[in-house]
Image 1 (cartoon, rainbow, N blue to C red):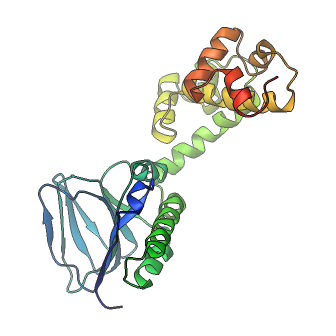
Image 2 (image 1 turned 90 degrees about the vertical axis):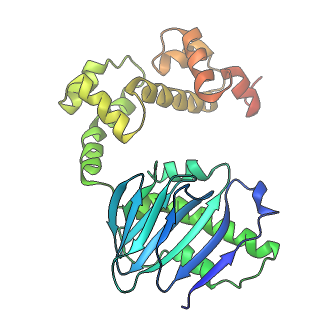
Length: 274
């Protein structure tokens, strides 16, 4: 493929939660220096050769099988350190762009490693589409971009310590799931994982980005939704007790904090209210 750059028409797609702005491929990526960063999110895939990426004075060597992400307005530069450095890339934006990256585990600018080094399929397909600005083409680009970011979570290699920590916390998550109907003290959960309560809190923050109590409450509320559907005759205090809340008022307060609705409002919204 020859070097190319596609400038996407955004007048129509800017209302979408996620949309592409530019897409490109370089047979040889030249040095790029952006002291003020770039206005959009960017994803680059290294196809051949090696380069040096600098983000906020942190230096990384990136080669085949690597991708690097750049958040908007973050100072950065990247330059080849091999005779040829082939890159494909996409710039994108939208109100959900940051959340999509967070879902994939990307929370800041920097490099990551792909499980397979082959060209990311949606990105390659974008580059083979005709370079024109018809609405249908730009909508298709946005759909492919969504698929690309949605699959990124599975395509990226987790750091070894993250894999280990997730494996260690798995037994705790299973214990929580089996015992949502009763109190779950932090000390008990820590004993399941054979760690201290303080270390368990750190594990939750690093792997699930939540405190244990917050995670448990979310699971209790999810269970309560299913109970509301399965047995619509149950009183709210009965449902509260079944998901581990002794106090129905506290259950209602947590339900609203998690969902934005009171339990009765939630039931009515889904046609379950009487």
